[in-house]
Amino acid sequence: MPFKTITTIVCDLQADRHALDAAVGLARRENGHLDVICLGLDRTQPGFYYAGTNAMALQDNLQQAQADSLKIEEAVNAHLAGTEIQWVANPLTAQMAGLTPQLSHYLRFSDVVVLPRPYGQGRGHEQEEILEAALFSSHVPVLVMPDIADLPESFDRIVVAWNESAEALGAVRAALPILEKADLVDVTIIDPPQHGPDRSDPGGSLCQMLVRHGVRAEVSVLAKTMPRVSDVLTRQLRDKDADLLVMGAYGHSRFRESILGGATRHMLEVAELPILMSH
Image 1 (spheres, one colour):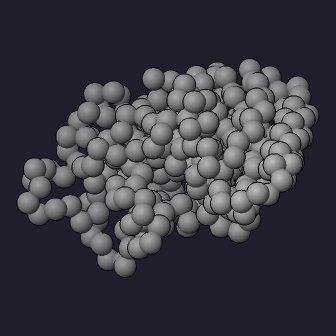
Image 2 (cartoon, rainbow, N blue to C red; image 1 turned 135 degrees about the vertical axis):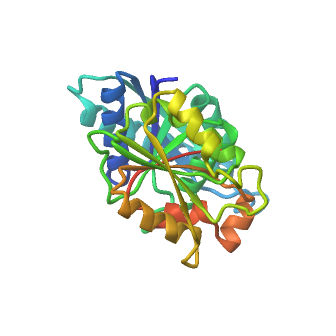
């Protein structure tokens, strides 16, 4: 399904400008419609105020969040003025405790959500929660834009991280509109299981599916010669001069990834190019 409804979320125009510009570029390329959610957040944590605190304090925080969302909307409107694509800016106010259900209500109708990287300098907990709201509650693919990366003019060379998981297959299906236009799609498999169902032809079934869609695909089977899977993937991306990485998100639990680390979190921390992920 082509990307016709593209959504991005702006909490701070200066910090999120590169993701907004990438969303504009993608909407222009796909002849799609861009929805910009201008998010004003009340970051008050439940239980922060002791019992009996004047309700005016809580109301002030909410009013400030509403003012922030309107200020962001005004800045987005000015930034996108004259842009030839179809777009709309929607102000939204939310409390941290209710952020996920509110975002899910809007994001569930999107074909893809474009977001900045959730980890790194200047990034707060809300960025991670926004990403997880899109992936887990809205079940929408997410294009993550690292701060140092711009949206390339075209995704000509793509690496697909393949591990036989449902998450990886979902990411491939979501990326088909992009994969079909690529010059080369490299299905990268790292240390395939010796006793798996596809041990005699790792990635063969996926490659066959892609070829039937007109995708120019090849398979690379790599050994885990570095400490982490993300390290091997990063090297492969450089070797293939890739424009995009397609991967499943959070094959392990989010708690395990947040405490022990995992391929998803590591790639989000170190990636130098856009990542299209799905769960």
